[in-house]
Image (cartoon, rainbow, N blue to C red; front, side, top):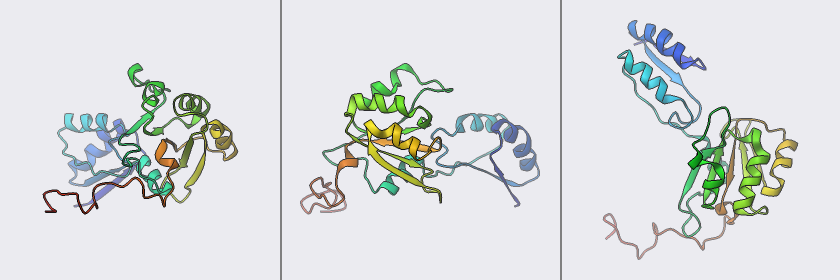
Length: 205
């Protein structure tokens, strides 16, 4: 079976035009996205288009920027006794955010948070986060996580806007905040139960 790869094309064009034509010709079509298609990937509308046209499809999961950023930073978002919740969100822009999910409301939880698609509003983001976490709290920005051009900025919320402008980062970046950023890599105080010799489960009697 021949394979046709489609990159960076509008979903309505590919679904109604090239994908449908290629499928009818017996080709296997690959629509390639960065990150993971389930998060800010417009995958729902593409599935709907394909379903309406009775074109079968399979979604292959990818690595979203939040997890690529954690790997680059060398952190664990869900460190025992520090944070057991990770919030993935964004500021309202051209795409609105439900009022109950506004950044200020979510930041009140003071848990690990990765903020997408908001670097252009960095001063507003920093002010909201500083109100919840404290202006001296550590935060990080990872630009083009896992890409050759990857750039990491680790700073304080009070300096976030200034440092991002100095680094000339204006897009394709995720903002990370939370107490796990402040735990030293050699700190073994916050251990999980996974390797505790006294911890029993069905595979360890």
